[in-house]
Length: 111
Image 1 (cartoon, helix red, strand yellow):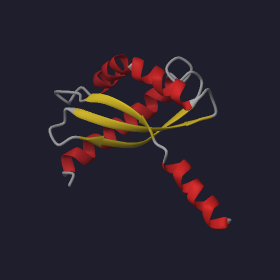
Image 2 (image 1 turned 30 degrees about the vertical axis):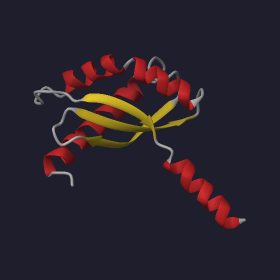
Image 3 (image 1 turned 45 degrees about the vertical axis):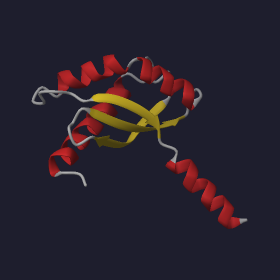
Image 4 (image 1 turned 180 degrees about the vertical axis):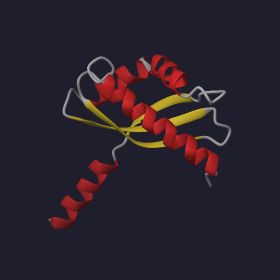
């Protein structure tokens, strides 16, 4: 179960990453629209798992690979914005396929 502190940190990281991806969409996201859907931080605050939805651009895997290659740069930029945090967690990025899964379920139910 997540603590209140973890929930707050997750929310702040999600906001900062969303802003970062909007500002750097061309360079980091290869022109695609990237939305941060979920952020999960471990209890020791050492790792953050970030789930992304990718729209209107190159292949999702290509965008994810570019984001993963730039994860150190992204972490540094987020760290600059979150000066009150002593340690910024490592960032691990994943594709959030929950929308695709829900769409597939709806399609199956209609048939």
